[in-house]
Length: 381
Image (cartoon, rainbow, N blue to C red; front, side, top):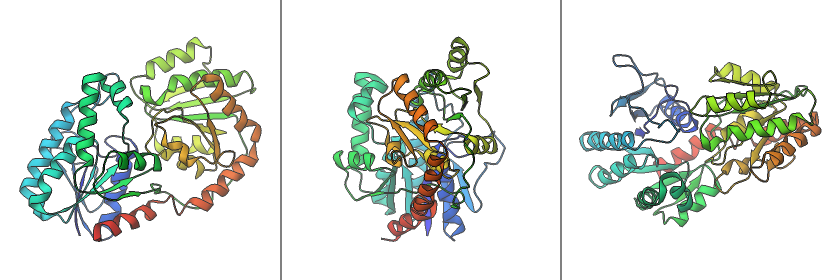
Protein backbone atom coordinates (compact mmCIF):
# COMPACT_ATOMS: atom_id res chain seq x y z
CA UNK A 1 0.00 0.00 0.00
CA UNK A 2 0.97 3.65 -0.47
CA UNK A 3 0.80 5.28 2.96
CA UNK A 4 1.36 8.88 3.98
CA UNK A 5 2.01 9.59 7.67
CA UNK A 6 1.45 13.17 8.80
CA UNK A 7 2.97 14.61 11.99
CA UNK A 8 4.90 17.82 12.54
CA UNK A 9 7.61 16.16 14.66
CA UNK A 10 10.06 13.34 13.94
CA UNK A 11 11.87 11.26 16.56
CA UNK A 12 14.72 11.61 17.55
CA UNK A 13 14.88 15.23 16.37
CA UNK A 14 12.12 15.85 18.90
CA UNK A 15 11.30 13.47 21.73
CA UNK A 16 7.86 12.43 22.95
CA UNK A 17 5.33 9.62 22.98
CA UNK A 18 3.67 10.57 19.70
CA UNK A 19 7.05 10.97 17.99
CA UNK A 20 8.04 7.45 19.03
CA UNK A 21 4.68 6.05 17.89
CA UNK A 22 4.95 7.51 14.37
CA UNK A 23 8.58 6.58 13.91
CA UNK A 24 7.89 2.99 14.98
CA UNK A 25 4.73 2.85 12.85
CA UNK A 26 6.49 4.19 9.75
CA UNK A 27 9.42 1.83 10.20
CA UNK A 28 7.26 -1.25 10.74
CA UNK A 29 5.09 -0.43 7.72
CA UNK A 30 8.13 0.07 5.50
CA UNK A 31 9.67 -3.18 6.73
CA UNK A 32 6.41 -4.89 5.79
CA UNK A 33 6.82 -3.85 2.16
CA UNK A 34 4.59 -0.78 2.12
CA UNK A 35 5.55 2.49 0.44
CA UNK A 36 5.72 5.01 3.27
CA UNK A 37 6.05 8.81 3.10
CA UNK A 38 6.38 10.87 6.30
CA UNK A 39 5.35 14.54 6.15
CA UNK A 40 6.76 16.77 8.90
CA UNK A 41 8.29 20.15 9.67
CA UNK A 42 12.04 20.39 9.22
CA UNK A 43 13.79 19.75 12.54
CA UNK A 44 17.27 19.06 11.22
CA UNK A 45 19.92 21.48 10.02
CA UNK A 46 19.63 22.89 6.52
CA UNK A 47 21.61 20.69 4.14
CA UNK A 48 21.62 17.73 6.54
CA UNK A 49 19.61 14.56 6.11
CA UNK A 50 16.80 13.64 8.54
CA UNK A 51 17.25 10.65 10.83
CA UNK A 52 14.62 8.57 9.04
CA UNK A 53 13.52 4.96 9.59
CA UNK A 54 14.84 2.53 6.99
CA UNK A 55 12.76 2.58 3.82
CA UNK A 56 10.75 5.69 4.81
CA UNK A 57 10.79 8.83 2.67
CA UNK A 58 10.73 11.88 4.95
CA UNK A 59 9.53 15.14 3.40
CA UNK A 60 9.67 18.51 5.15
CA UNK A 61 6.62 20.53 4.10
CA UNK A 62 7.55 23.49 6.29
CA UNK A 63 10.67 25.21 7.65
CA UNK A 64 12.44 24.62 10.92
CA UNK A 65 10.49 26.47 13.62
CA UNK A 66 10.43 26.73 17.38
CA UNK A 67 7.42 24.62 18.40
CA UNK A 68 7.02 25.69 22.03
CA UNK A 69 6.80 28.93 23.97
CA UNK A 70 9.11 29.62 26.90
CA UNK A 71 6.41 28.23 29.22
CA UNK A 72 6.34 24.91 27.37
CA UNK A 73 3.07 25.39 25.48
CA UNK A 74 2.66 24.84 21.77
CA UNK A 75 3.01 27.94 19.58
CA UNK A 76 0.16 28.55 17.12
CA UNK A 77 2.16 29.62 14.05
CA UNK A 78 4.04 26.32 13.40
CA UNK A 79 0.81 24.23 13.20
CA UNK A 80 -0.68 26.76 10.76
CA UNK A 81 2.44 26.66 8.58
CA UNK A 82 2.50 22.86 8.75
CA UNK A 83 -1.18 22.65 7.82
CA UNK A 84 -0.60 24.83 4.76
CA UNK A 85 2.38 22.68 3.78
CA UNK A 86 0.34 19.49 4.11
CA UNK A 87 -2.46 21.07 2.06
CA UNK A 88 -0.08 22.06 -0.73
CA UNK A 89 1.56 18.63 -0.82
CA UNK A 90 -1.70 16.69 -0.87
CA UNK A 91 -3.18 18.92 -3.57
CA UNK A 92 -0.18 18.00 -5.73
CA UNK A 93 0.38 14.40 -4.64
CA UNK A 94 -2.73 13.23 -2.82
CA UNK A 95 -3.76 10.75 -5.50
CA UNK A 96 -0.43 8.96 -4.99
CA UNK A 97 -1.62 7.68 -1.59
CA UNK A 98 -4.06 4.97 -0.63
CA UNK A 99 -4.10 6.01 3.03
CA UNK A 100 -3.24 9.23 4.84
CA UNK A 101 -2.62 8.51 8.53
CA UNK A 102 -2.38 11.65 10.62
CA UNK A 103 -2.34 12.84 14.21
CA UNK A 104 -5.37 14.88 15.18
CA UNK A 105 -3.10 17.46 16.82
CA UNK A 106 -1.98 19.97 15.65
CA UNK A 107 -5.40 20.26 14.07
CA UNK A 108 -4.60 22.36 10.98
CA UNK A 109 -2.90 19.43 9.26
CA UNK A 110 -6.00 17.28 9.85
CA UNK A 111 -8.19 20.05 8.40
CA UNK A 112 -5.92 20.02 5.32
CA UNK A 113 -6.26 16.23 5.00
CA UNK A 114 -10.03 16.50 5.31
CA UNK A 115 -10.21 19.23 2.67
CA UNK A 116 -8.29 17.20 0.07
CA UNK A 117 -9.86 13.81 0.80
CA UNK A 118 -12.90 14.23 -1.52
CA UNK A 119 -10.58 15.18 -4.39
CA UNK A 120 -7.83 12.60 -3.94
CA UNK A 121 -10.04 9.83 -2.55
CA UNK A 122 -7.53 8.42 -0.09
CA UNK A 123 -8.68 6.81 3.16
CA UNK A 124 -8.25 9.00 6.25
CA UNK A 125 -7.01 7.44 9.49
CA UNK A 126 -6.61 9.71 12.52
CA UNK A 127 -4.86 9.15 15.86
CA UNK A 128 -6.49 11.06 18.69
CA UNK A 129 -3.80 10.87 21.35
CA UNK A 130 -5.88 13.21 23.49
CA UNK A 131 -9.30 14.87 23.36
CA UNK A 132 -9.34 17.99 25.49
CA UNK A 133 -12.34 18.99 27.56
CA UNK A 134 -13.92 22.43 27.23
CA UNK A 135 -12.57 23.30 30.68
CA UNK A 136 -9.03 22.37 29.78
CA UNK A 137 -9.21 24.39 26.56
CA UNK A 138 -10.20 27.47 28.58
CA UNK A 139 -7.41 26.87 31.06
CA UNK A 140 -4.84 26.40 28.30
CA UNK A 141 -5.76 29.31 25.99
CA UNK A 142 -8.16 31.49 27.96
CA UNK A 143 -11.86 32.09 27.33
CA UNK A 144 -11.62 33.32 23.71
CA UNK A 145 -8.69 31.17 22.55
CA UNK A 146 -10.06 28.13 24.37
CA UNK A 147 -13.44 28.47 22.69
CA UNK A 148 -11.73 28.72 19.30
CA UNK A 149 -9.55 25.69 20.01
CA UNK A 150 -12.53 23.63 21.13
CA UNK A 151 -14.43 24.64 17.96
CA UNK A 152 -11.53 23.46 15.78
CA UNK A 153 -11.39 20.17 17.70
CA UNK A 154 -15.13 19.66 17.12
CA UNK A 155 -14.71 20.43 13.42
CA UNK A 156 -11.90 17.87 13.15
CA UNK A 157 -14.05 15.22 14.83
CA UNK A 158 -16.64 15.68 12.09
CA UNK A 159 -14.26 14.93 9.22
CA UNK A 160 -15.06 11.45 7.81
CA UNK A 161 -12.35 9.18 9.19
CA UNK A 162 -11.38 5.98 10.93
CA UNK A 163 -10.18 6.99 14.36
CA UNK A 164 -7.73 5.48 16.83
CA UNK A 165 -7.37 6.41 20.49
CA UNK A 166 -4.85 5.02 22.94
CA UNK A 167 -7.11 5.00 25.98
CA UNK A 168 -10.76 4.40 26.76
CA UNK A 169 -10.94 7.84 28.39
CA UNK A 170 -10.20 9.68 25.17
CA UNK A 171 -12.19 7.26 23.01
CA UNK A 172 -15.28 8.06 25.04
CA UNK A 173 -14.60 11.79 24.81
CA UNK A 174 -14.20 11.51 21.05
CA UNK A 175 -17.55 9.78 20.69
CA UNK A 176 -19.11 12.54 22.78
CA UNK A 177 -17.56 15.12 20.43
CA UNK A 178 -19.69 13.68 17.64
CA UNK A 179 -17.10 11.71 15.69
CA UNK A 180 -18.32 10.56 12.30
CA UNK A 181 -16.96 7.04 12.11
CA UNK A 182 -15.73 4.17 14.23
CA UNK A 183 -13.32 4.59 17.16
CA UNK A 184 -10.81 1.84 17.91
CA UNK A 185 -8.63 1.75 21.03
CA UNK A 186 -5.01 0.79 20.43
CA UNK A 187 -3.48 -0.45 23.66
CA UNK A 188 -0.03 -1.32 22.31
CA UNK A 189 2.84 1.08 21.66
CA UNK A 190 5.70 -0.86 23.24
CA UNK A 191 8.33 -1.73 20.61
CA UNK A 192 11.09 -3.25 22.76
CA UNK A 193 11.63 -6.81 24.05
CA UNK A 194 8.57 -8.62 25.38
CA UNK A 195 10.66 -10.99 27.53
CA UNK A 196 9.56 -11.37 31.13
CA UNK A 197 11.75 -9.01 33.18
CA UNK A 198 14.23 -10.36 35.70
CA UNK A 199 13.36 -9.21 39.21
CA UNK A 200 16.14 -7.31 40.94
CA UNK A 201 16.58 -6.41 44.57
CA UNK A 202 14.78 -3.22 45.54
CA UNK A 203 16.88 -0.08 45.90
CA UNK A 204 15.31 2.99 47.54
CA UNK A 205 15.37 5.08 44.35
CA UNK A 206 12.45 7.01 42.85
CA UNK A 207 12.75 7.82 39.13
CA UNK A 208 10.80 10.55 37.31
CA UNK A 209 11.08 10.85 33.52
CA UNK A 210 9.29 13.44 31.41
CA UNK A 211 9.46 16.83 29.76
CA UNK A 212 9.71 19.50 32.44
CA UNK A 213 6.59 21.46 31.56
CA UNK A 214 3.77 22.54 33.92
CA UNK A 215 1.52 19.62 32.94
CA UNK A 216 4.09 17.08 34.15
CA UNK A 217 4.18 18.70 37.63
CA UNK A 218 7.82 17.96 38.37
CA UNK A 219 7.67 20.41 41.29
CA UNK A 220 5.02 18.16 42.85
CA UNK A 221 7.44 15.26 42.43
CA UNK A 222 10.10 17.22 44.35
CA UNK A 223 7.68 18.05 47.17
CA UNK A 224 6.42 14.46 47.40
CA UNK A 225 9.97 13.10 47.43
CA UNK A 226 10.86 15.51 50.24
CA UNK A 227 7.92 14.26 52.33
CA UNK A 228 8.61 10.58 51.60
CA UNK A 229 12.31 10.95 52.43
CA UNK A 230 11.31 11.80 56.00
CA UNK A 231 9.77 8.33 56.27
CA UNK A 232 12.12 6.19 54.16
CA UNK A 233 15.76 6.23 55.32
CA UNK A 234 18.28 6.66 52.52
CA UNK A 235 15.68 7.45 49.86
CA UNK A 236 17.17 8.83 46.64
CA UNK A 237 15.55 10.35 43.59
CA UNK A 238 16.43 10.97 39.95
CA UNK A 239 14.38 13.40 37.82
CA UNK A 240 15.17 12.98 34.12
CA UNK A 241 14.01 15.44 31.48
CA UNK A 242 14.51 18.90 30.08
CA UNK A 243 12.12 21.81 29.69
CA UNK A 244 11.17 25.29 30.89
CA UNK A 245 10.74 24.18 34.52
CA UNK A 246 14.24 22.71 34.84
CA UNK A 247 15.58 25.80 36.62
CA UNK A 248 12.65 25.85 39.02
CA UNK A 249 13.16 22.15 39.78
CA UNK A 250 16.84 22.68 40.58
CA UNK A 251 15.92 25.63 42.79
CA UNK A 252 13.27 23.59 44.64
CA UNK A 253 15.77 20.79 45.26
CA UNK A 254 18.25 23.25 46.75
CA UNK A 255 15.64 25.10 48.82
CA UNK A 256 14.45 21.86 50.40
CA UNK A 257 17.99 20.76 51.23
CA UNK A 258 17.76 17.72 48.95
CA UNK A 259 21.00 18.23 47.02
CA UNK A 260 22.80 14.91 47.12
CA UNK A 261 19.60 12.91 47.61
CA UNK A 262 17.63 14.16 44.58
CA UNK A 263 19.20 14.95 41.21
CA UNK A 264 17.80 16.52 38.02
CA UNK A 265 20.47 15.97 35.33
CA UNK A 266 18.24 16.99 32.41
CA UNK A 267 18.04 15.00 29.19
CA UNK A 268 20.03 11.75 29.24
CA UNK A 269 20.71 8.95 26.72
CA UNK A 270 18.19 6.12 26.52
CA UNK A 271 20.73 3.71 28.01
CA UNK A 272 21.02 5.85 31.14
CA UNK A 273 17.25 5.94 31.60
CA UNK A 274 17.07 2.18 31.01
CA UNK A 275 19.57 1.53 33.80
CA UNK A 276 17.80 3.98 36.11
CA UNK A 277 14.42 2.29 35.63
CA UNK A 278 15.89 -1.16 36.22
CA UNK A 279 17.48 -0.04 39.48
CA UNK A 280 14.54 2.02 40.74
CA UNK A 281 12.14 1.14 43.52
CA UNK A 282 9.42 2.84 41.45
CA UNK A 283 8.72 5.13 38.53
CA UNK A 284 6.88 8.27 39.62
CA UNK A 285 4.69 10.16 37.15
CA UNK A 286 3.03 13.25 38.60
CA UNK A 287 1.60 14.26 35.21
CA UNK A 288 -1.92 15.69 35.20
CA UNK A 289 -2.52 14.95 31.50
CA UNK A 290 -1.61 11.79 29.60
CA UNK A 291 -3.13 10.25 26.50
CA UNK A 292 -1.58 6.86 27.20
CA UNK A 293 1.29 6.62 29.69
CA UNK A 294 4.03 4.73 27.86
CA UNK A 295 6.47 5.20 30.74
CA UNK A 296 4.28 2.90 32.87
CA UNK A 297 4.75 0.09 30.34
CA UNK A 298 8.45 0.83 29.96
CA UNK A 299 8.92 0.62 33.72
CA UNK A 300 6.92 -2.61 34.01
CA UNK A 301 9.04 -4.16 31.25
CA UNK A 302 11.95 -3.74 33.65
CA UNK A 303 10.04 -5.13 36.62
CA UNK A 304 9.57 -1.67 38.14
CA UNK A 305 6.17 -0.61 39.53
CA UNK A 306 4.75 2.84 38.80
CA UNK A 307 2.99 5.59 40.71
CA UNK A 308 0.57 7.84 38.82
CA UNK A 309 -1.78 10.56 40.04
CA UNK A 310 -5.54 10.34 39.53
CA UNK A 311 -7.09 13.11 37.44
CA UNK A 312 -9.81 13.64 34.87
CA UNK A 313 -7.26 14.09 32.05
CA UNK A 314 -4.83 11.31 33.04
CA UNK A 315 -5.36 8.16 30.98
CA UNK A 316 -2.20 6.57 32.44
CA UNK A 317 -4.33 5.36 35.35
CA UNK A 318 -5.85 2.80 32.95
CA UNK A 319 -2.50 1.01 32.91
CA UNK A 320 -2.29 0.61 36.69
CA UNK A 321 -3.76 -2.36 38.54
CA UNK A 322 -3.66 -1.30 42.16
CA UNK A 323 -1.02 -3.18 44.21
CA UNK A 324 -0.23 -5.37 41.17
CA UNK A 325 2.01 -3.19 38.98
CA UNK A 326 1.95 0.00 41.04
CA UNK A 327 -0.42 2.37 42.75
CA UNK A 328 -2.53 5.46 42.08
CA UNK A 329 -2.20 8.56 44.25
CA UNK A 330 -5.76 9.75 44.70
CA UNK A 331 -4.94 13.47 44.56
CA UNK A 332 -2.17 15.86 43.56
CA UNK A 333 -1.20 16.69 47.13
CA UNK A 334 2.42 16.13 48.05
CA UNK A 335 1.48 14.18 51.17
CA UNK A 336 -0.81 11.86 49.19
CA UNK A 337 1.86 11.20 46.56
CA UNK A 338 4.38 10.63 49.37
CA UNK A 339 2.01 8.05 50.88
CA UNK A 340 2.03 6.24 47.52
CA UNK A 341 5.85 6.19 47.50
CA UNK A 342 5.82 4.72 51.00
CA UNK A 343 3.27 2.07 49.96
CA UNK A 344 5.52 0.92 47.13
CA UNK A 345 8.54 0.89 49.43
CA UNK A 346 6.74 -1.17 52.05
CA UNK A 347 5.51 -3.66 49.41
CA UNK A 348 9.14 -4.49 48.67
CA UNK A 349 10.31 -7.13 46.24
CA UNK A 350 6.90 -8.82 46.07
CA UNK A 351 5.50 -5.83 44.17
CA UNK A 352 8.38 -6.11 41.72
CA UNK A 353 7.57 -9.78 41.19
CA UNK A 354 3.92 -8.91 40.70
CA UNK A 355 4.84 -6.16 38.22
CA UNK A 356 6.97 -8.61 36.22
CA UNK A 357 4.07 -11.06 36.11
CA UNK A 358 1.70 -8.28 35.02
CA UNK A 359 3.99 -7.36 32.15
CA UNK A 360 4.38 -10.99 31.09
CA UNK A 361 0.60 -11.43 31.07
CA UNK A 362 -0.09 -8.21 29.14
CA UNK A 363 2.95 -7.73 26.93
CA UNK A 364 1.32 -9.08 23.76
CA UNK A 365 -1.66 -6.75 24.17
CA UNK A 366 0.63 -3.78 24.87
CA UNK A 367 3.03 -4.48 22.02
CA UNK A 368 3.54 -2.39 18.91
CA UNK A 369 2.87 -5.50 16.83
CA UNK A 370 -0.66 -5.83 18.24
CA UNK A 371 -1.46 -2.24 17.27
CA UNK A 372 0.17 -2.58 13.86
CA UNK A 373 -2.03 -5.59 13.11
CA UNK A 374 -5.13 -3.54 13.95
CA UNK A 375 -3.90 -0.54 11.92
CA UNK A 376 -3.42 -2.72 8.85
CA UNK A 377 -6.90 -4.16 9.27
CA UNK A 378 -8.31 -0.63 9.15
CA UNK A 379 -6.18 0.32 6.16
CA UNK A 380 -7.55 -2.55 4.11
CA UNK A 381 -11.17 -2.38 5.32
